[in-house]
Amino acid sequence: MEKKQYRKKPVVVEAFQWCTSMGQVGGVTYPVVDEYGDEDLDFVDSYGNEAGLIQNDAGGFPVQDGDWVITGLDGKLYSCKSDMFVQIYEAVEPTDAVTPTPVIL
Image (cartoon, rainbow, N blue to C red):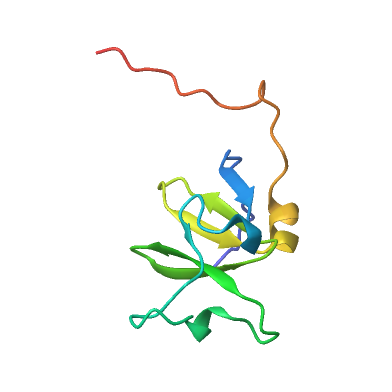
């Protein structure tokens, strides 16, 4: 089997950097509480820092201070650690953004 190299296709995504002081915003649930109304300790990291929750049909994704919330090509929200985000994405100038072309039937 011959291995080939592949390049990730350039895509433009919408994203924002989340922090706990923002509270519930853009599809992030914060604070996360259990069925009894108590803070859900599953959404506190090992340092005791609180985390938010992004819920979609792919499951629940924790989001912590400084994480980026990305709207994927499928319209679903995902979290991404800041160090990974800056390795993968770069800011797009408004003139570089892809504008959908309407289809006329």
